[in-house]
Every structure is written in structure tokens, then in C-alpha cells.
Image (cartoon, rainbow, N blue to C red; front, side, top):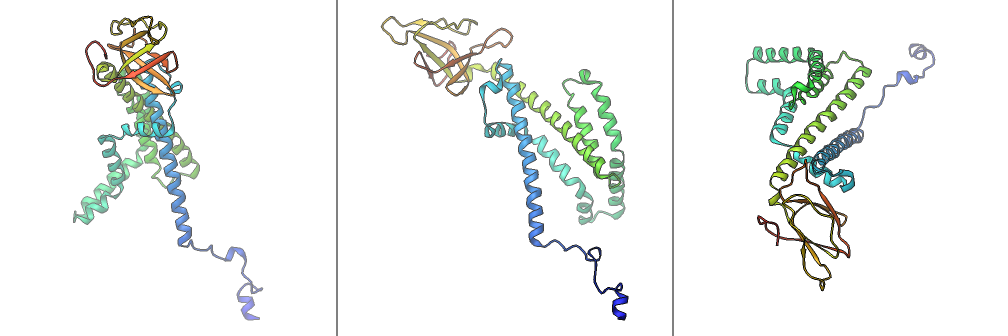
Length: 297
């Protein structure tokens, strides 16, 4: 009887009194797998987005809609790898290393006073994360004068919002909103970087158009391909030839789904067109090795 009274009068434990079971090894494995899967999905989505933005800027330079060309997910992901440059890798390594910097310095035997000072500086920077957000917003109003370094504005806002995630005083709702806004600014930053790189790649390829694959086009009928001096006049091979006309002075930009996107020698995006030819019975397209001043022969 006494034992029942001591335990609450019933001798039974309610659900509130029963502690939650500790996660076992299998539970931790599932949690790690879910975290890895979520992170991988996020990274893959950003890679596809970066590849799409790069291709849109690159092919837009040549008057082509990237959706009309058609690229699969693997091609977009591979294209996004161009953004992974040495400065980007160095920055990511520093971001991952900085939280562990005090422990690393302590392991090297650095005096505790120095390590403590560094900790206080880091805490002060994190505490002032709103300053970085405000500075980034101010830079947004200076968008045009900052060109071509306008990407600094979304980068500053993103850094400030992410630093604010380290403060435990924030509520779950505040953290979720900050993380969502930081994600939007990160996507904007990726779009700016990928678009700028695509523009630079297109300008470089247009300037070195002679280094691209030479193309010779044979057709049964005259094609309405007139334009810049780099495009040679069609050669008439005679009535007895099935493919009577030959066009030279062209270079291959890209080939997709039996469609060839061709640019003339000396391409100028302000005045010159990009030709789109479909390989069928009335057209034969030959890709030639090497280059020459007047076009492929």
C-alpha cells in the first residue's frame, strides 16, 4: 500500500512519466541519410539552375533560345561545374573552416587569451549580422553604379542572413524566414554569376569563331542564307549534282536533334544572324577538321 502511495497512488506510470526512447544506431543512420539526401537534392537543384542560367546567357548572345535547343539535366549539371573555380572553392573552404578556427589554434598551442579574443571577435561579427543585411540592401539601391560588381549586394545580404542563423535567440519561425530569404538571394547570386560567365564565354567564342568546327552545307535548292562577308557565296556545282549548291564560311555552334546551329565567319551579334538547318534529304551537312581563312574546303 505504501509503495503505491509513494508512486502516485495507482502504482502505474503515465505517458508523461515515460522518457522518450534514445535514438539507436539505426535511427541515427536514417537521420544522417535524410540529411545527406536533402543536401544533395538542394545542391543538384542549384547546379541545374546555374547551368540553365549559363546556357541562357551564352546562347542568348547568339540569338538562340536555350529552351529551343534543348538540354538534358546532365548537360546542365556539367555546365554548372564551370562555376566551381579556385576562388569559389577557397571561399567555401574558409566558410567551413572558420567555425573550427579557435579549436585549431588551441591545438597548435596558441595562448588561450588570443583564442578568446578571436572568439569574441567572431561573436561580435555574428551579433552585427543585421549591419551586413542593411549594407546589402543599401547596395541594392546602387545597382547601376556598382556594375559590373553588382553581385556584391545579394552576396552581402546572404552573408548577413546566414550569420544570423548562428544566434540561438531567434525563434524557429524567424530562422525559417531568414533561411528562405537567404536561399532566394543565393539563387539570385548564382544567376548573376552564371549569366556573367555565359556572356564572357560567348564573347570569347565569337571572337575566336575561326577555331570552331568548319561546316560545309550542300543543298538541292538555293537557301536563303545571305549576310555577312564571312559567309561565302554559294557555289553552283552543276545541274547534274543532286546537291547542287555548296555553302562555306560557316562554323558550328551546337547540334541538337538533327538541327545544326551555324554562325558565319567574323560573327557580329549586332548585325549577323545565326542559321538553323535541319539535316534532311534536301540538305547535307559536313563537319570538317581544321580551319582556314576563307572557310572550310
